[in-house]
Image (cartoon, rainbow, N blue to C red; front, top):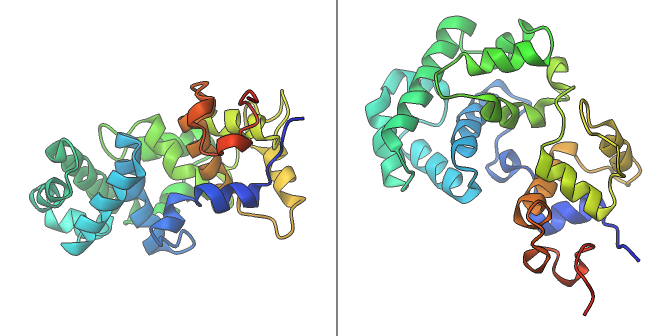
Length: 234
């Protein structure tokens, strides 16, 4: 019989959203700004460990957020990223500084102001991508997924493919659910838990599971071990 997992159990086993891991308060403007920097780094590498090291290196040099990055310029950011072992530090530093400068110039340094001027998810994603060359749809989606509750325009953002694949495997979704648009079925499933876990934390845990195993068919590498629902019993 296929084993099912609760959202809370998956978060406990696989970890919460990266913003939680890095103590970024997404309810505050400062935390939101730092999450933009983190999302740019994370989307470029897809590696939470490398991104965490890069964020720590930036913070150690007083470059934790867009305001500081815009004031310091790309040279300081490049040095910090290189010290953290982040690949192609010059390119990434230039992108971060350009995005930070344009955020200040176009939106008074406020991501809330940027979101308030966007009518719908496409306009919101486009506004984020317009901050700097090299910020694409993957970065915009990475940034917006934990902000569905904060920005109404982000609510319709669908689950990432790895997260949805994992949700199907562990029984949080059924075939045909949450294929596009707002992940309402997953949200409803989590509301049945007491207390309900945060959607962003569960989505991040599912994404890790999906990238590690579900999307690859690599059941022997599944982080759930012998409890993997897709693993053939021996």
